[in-house]
Length: 356
Image (tube, rainbow, N blue to C red):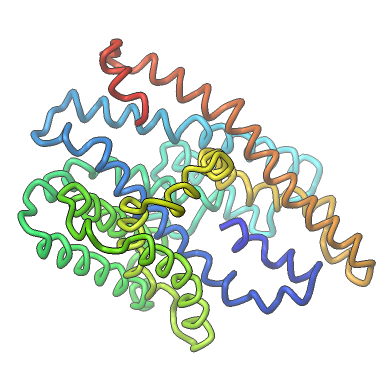
């Protein structure tokens, strides 16, 4: 997503990078991949707790998930509020759509993480709509768990996943729906579908379906094939969203993979950036908007390649450092604090939930 949102800057500074335009334009499907993974992981950690619905367990689940996403999310939103107010005071609009994007109503909807539940457009932190959609998926997880406990055969799981993704694809392709349903509401349904598909992949993994397949090869094939397929679809004038059908088996393959693939995924560098990725995702667009006020890429057109590369690296470096700072100073301390203060907290639960 960073590449997707920063691509305009890349091209202004390094024009030959325009050849990567199909890859950049298809970058938005990374959100679907994330939610497929999220559905798998949430099911892995919590499915057994929802064999039977319990109000107490549900409240505990929501608190733990809130502890995971809200501290960094709220800090980013408040930081953006400060930047917008300072910009208005100085007469420097933070965004050309300042009045519509940064409305009081949108702010309070963002605080409550409901801005994607029917609002017409993304507001405030424009990537925050996906966090709102994620919160919606968490609220619906007991229903997802009920579905998983009713699955009896691998074919039921596969056909259900295919049906859910087909509905997601139909929502994406049917542009006329935008006349009746707000943009973010359609995206909310899309994202929830990807979450359910990921949960169904966990069911297959739990039952060890197709365990004996050569998942190292298949995962490598799917991992490389997904961006290639997305680019080819873009070049053919088709939507890269068609690649959503490759995402659930890719997630299943990553879970099954062993050997070199597993060692690569377990590497210290990848694990660290995986941990920081949420904070980076929350802040990267704000960093781009802020830096563009003082380091406008167009000002460097015609300068030396070394200088333009330096400007580009500055954008990436600042985005990375801000994400790292948010992770270490707000996200992790906030998560630990909220987990300690959750209702009914005790040592056994704390041990059980340490990886949630």
